[in-house]
Length: 231
Image (cartoon, helix red, strand yellow):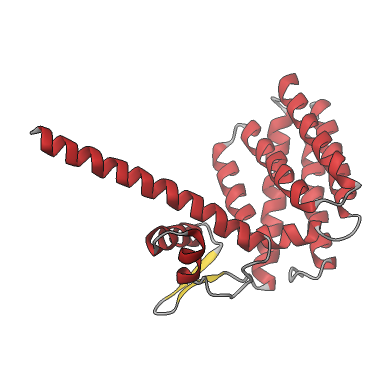
């Protein structure tokens, strides 16, 4: 292989990494727009508008939309483009109930193996969320809430269930965010988090299952009260 060929391959690899990195950034931005309601269910993703706003070509935007379509957040309609996916009442309820069962199982598995260090980490997340409750700062609360749930899955040790759980989380982003935006909900949500951590500290698998399951089921009720189409 000549030096010129090696150089070309090296530049191609750099371009590939640059494109992938940009795609990841664009994907995170579109996901944020969906969660925050800037892009609404059934709304078409304006590729030209996003390209102009972000100062990039349409390529990374199309790749990001394709990745989000694979995650269930965006729907591809042939000859029309990318649209924010809107869940039907039945789909949202099915997903939420399945998520409740899986989160309960993840919590149960974690109770059997949790370490003191892991408990301390979860308690740290609880305190961060607690500090945001009085201000009803859902924009800062929600990412920590997501991280708390993600850590339960990661710590459980069951990668297959954790992957399935995260796929449900992505599809239900909009409903969950808006449910937490309702008045006085953050305190109730974090009280349920704390009950789960207490069950984990007790190393009680069945108590942890019930706490995890009930937390998600209660979230379904909160989502319904917030006016989201779940039941």
